[in-house]
Each structure stands twice: as C-alpha cells, then as structure tokens.
View 1 (tube, rainbow, N blue to C red):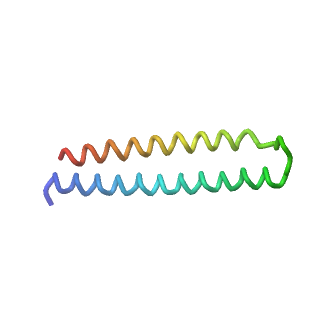
View 2: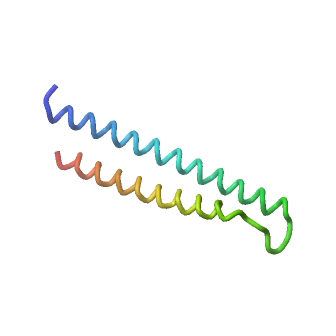
Length: 82
C-alpha cells in the first residue's frame, strides 16, 4: 500500500471516530434533555430547581459537539487536498 493510500485510510478512520464521538455526544445531550424534563415535570411548579451540574453538562456537550464538527472539517479538508 502506498503512503498516500495509507494516509487516506487513516484519515477515513479518524473521521469515522469523530463521527462516532459526535453520535455519542448527541445521545448524551438528548439524555440530558430528558433528565431536565423529568426534573421539571416531577416538580410541577413555576420555578423548578435544576442542579447546576445539568447546565454545566449541557454546555460541555455543546462545546464538545462544536470541537468534533471542527475536527471533522479539518480532517475532511486535509483528506480532500491529498
């Protein structure tokens, strides 16, 4: 296998890994939303209490998804230039 073909194969594997990471992060984000709704529904009041960690986790997942999208764009751009 030539060096260029091997690089393409490795970049394809890297992009697949980024895609898997994005899918897991999106699933975690959906589960976090479910947890938020469950807390609000259980309390059934105008100003429900939500743990601070819930907002922090949501923000961290948003940041992760942004970084994964950027990584995928960078790897894809590099791969297309080869």
